[in-house]
Image (cartoon, rainbow, N blue to C red; front, side, top):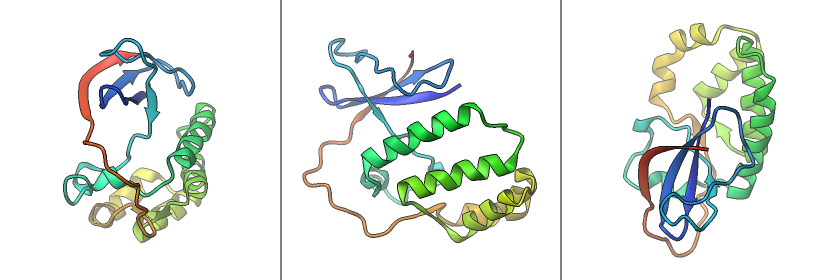
Length: 162
């Protein structure tokens, strides 16, 4: 059951919404303003230790429109996916990297190749866990500037119903 992040530009706040199903189109109203539809945000897939300093994830160097399109595609494909098949999970990750232009780190790439070959993901993690923990899972080219920065948004920790 997914949790989606939405952003209100008026409040400069991120909100979490729980959905009982994969829902890629619904846009709730801001729980604080009650007058503006929120904009869906791309949730990061980084582990907590992935950010080297405060603000690193604010400059996520992937085009937001491209990321939203990729997430919509992945959400539709994930609905019919057999979660027990490592090849399907690897295929989904491969489609994500192709759609966004994100490159996997060397250890993540090796783990993905092993899953594409049908190896059990738990076995791959057991054998490669230390390597995967030590390196950044995704690699990016040059960071692109985004102009004037806005203050970092507040995060509302309440889990709302979508």
